[in-house]
Image (cartoon, rainbow, N blue to C red):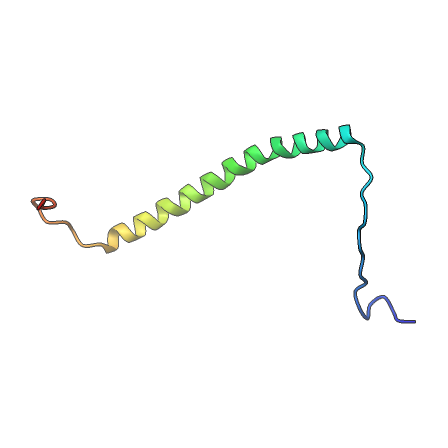
Length: 71
């Protein structure tokens, strides 16, 4: 017999018994919770993009005074 601290045990889930209505309610709550999470991730991404753009904007050389040439 081995101790519980020696090796992690393995578990295989074969079935989850959950009423259909409860599952629908859970998935609706999950979808509603995803909306603020996406807003927060969008704001974080925008801040990172703005900071990266500001850093690289200072590193790029100035464009010519006449603007870009068209050929």
